[in-house]
Amino acid sequence: MATQAVDLLGEDLWGEVESSQNSGCLPLAQAARHLLEAKDHAHEFVADILVGQSPTDRAGRVLVEILREYAKKIPIPGEEVVESSAHALRIMGICICTIGANLSSCYCLADLAEAAGNERIDEALTAGLNEWAEKA
Image 1: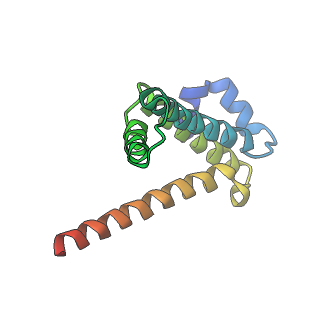
Image 2: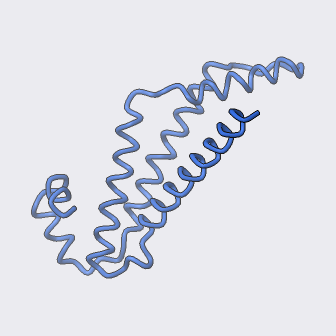
């Protein structure tokens, strides 16, 4: 990890990070969260543009909600870069907390674990639903 951090930050800055009495990774965790929130806002923006004004009748509202959900899943250019950048910030934060022996209070590790846990739950639910559908 340290080699990759040197590649990303440069040897001088990474040397300062390693030798400093760091106060943890909170700024990196917050930056990663902001990147991911911006990605979510971009998806909402695409949905708003595509849907426009919501109709007043129930059937129209249901169709609009279907369209909104579809629009939120449209890939946005650069989305993968945003996600990988947030991930890289979290990894650097974990490395910083490891160096400073603060891993038990590492915000980046907690955020990464939560994201991975949610992904695993989604995978398990999807697999269960698929298995149930096959048997039905």
